Picture 1 (tube, one colour):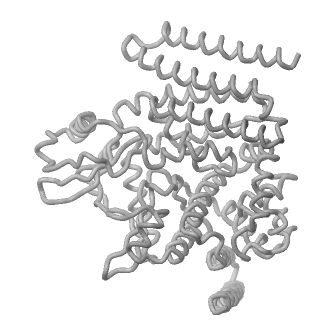
Picture 2 (picture 1 turned 90 degrees about the horizontal axis):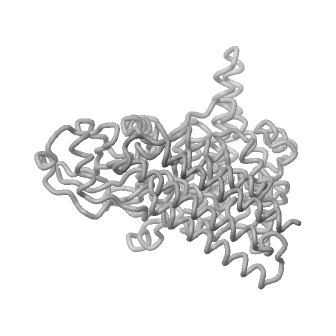
Length: 506
């Protein structure tokens, strides 16, 4: 009976996909060539999704396989399914690449086979031809491209889901980086969102534990800003002004005379990827210093300013060191930011302070303020990527998790995958963006061998102390309350500074 229900669901999915294709073909716009293009993209996505669903529906090892052989079979199925979906995303491009990048950044949620297969989209997304890009460029700037450009370097600096970037030598002597949207990306984005939404809905119907509607909602909410390069240029300038106190942080300068909604022209900056250990080793760059600086930047973003870079991955962060300058971190791709509310930011600060102190009641209270309910231990573990025992025992700064702890974390991710999905659907949307930021910092630390350094947690603690104190000062009713809040802050910062000195000494 159970297998019969499986067959019925798969057949129903196939029928709905076929009906949707027919509707697209008969009720789309008058331009038949464009309609055919949409149909091909939809059909490719539906076909890949159907193949993956069939594989999972009729594999008994997915739910109840526990032997080594069954685990190997399950892993192979994950791997082959990920390849099938990756190839489809690569051919369709656009938002499908964006969805693949999201999968690659969520190693706490998706099987590691998916994460590893989709990581290619962080650095090697499909590319548009130079001819296509120059057509976009000429149309956007309203000028003959040859009158502006001396040389257009063919190899892209980076190819992303919505655009690609090239080094360009201008005829006026400037060397710039030009980020140009892929042709038709705006035209296809609406249909792509509907396709992804339809397939996610079907998957959640076939597999009740697969609830990723929140992911589609995030894409729909963020897409307009990501497609507007004027917005990105403004974000870049705001970022530079907010973090002028950090001389080691840099954002490229915008060249407004050659910037439109689909073309962003900026200062060309050289450097290696933030997770490239060999690049740093060859240039004598201190990996611990890089991790500390990156952690300090994001701690300042989240806890103090509440202004967060929402698309962090290694391809968007460069590192460089000149002979006469300190090591610099260069932030690229400023298309998506969010401004945290004071209420959310302080709740998150208090949560971290509770975890660092091992105060489980404070952790529970603040997790529940973030809509975690009785799943507060799971949310806390997701935030800091450590076990609940480590949190309860105030051991977050003890160093990297042991092999036993890593095995426990991996086991819990599999065991509580349904609960994790439930949490992601109920917590505030801003917390999802912070998860992405945390993922970047942790992946860089893993690549550079600096995972979970005590210095990083101390830096985070300092930002939490300052954020809570600034809020108290902001809402103080008199001089005495202001002075008290400042003295408390200075005392807590002194304790953290002394602890940091002691830690570095021993």
